[in-house]
Length: 163
Ligand code: MG
Image (cartoon, rainbow, N blue to C red; front, side):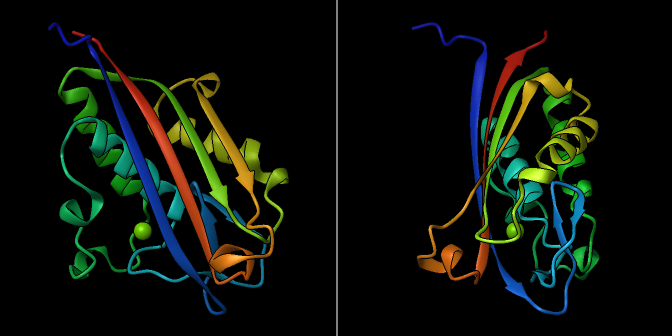
């Protein structure tokens, strides 16, 4: 069987909401009275995107590449992780066809930020805005999302061969 020159990658992440941190989603600072806890800047969406890219390349996960036990990544801007992953994508002869992502947060309301987040992702990844979709869902007031204990992010990416 000939394998078609495409690869698909899936990413998921969750971070806890805490009171003493800024909320950064997809590289965009969101106005809110709480933020996400994590070793880096805890950008849950950028972590999911990084995992989707690494997954598509069959290169493991973000924890293997950037261990949260490594002081080098303490407080790190998660753009660093995405940039390393997209560099690896291109180095291996692939390009992103499209990226679809969902952020799960009961609050704050993310609809006013979806455009800015998609534009931020487009800039970070170096691809046209039209190839990116960002969705926002609540937790319907149940579970860790609904109780505002955490924010989740999902990302799925399709890679196409360039060489
Ligand atoms: Mg994470």
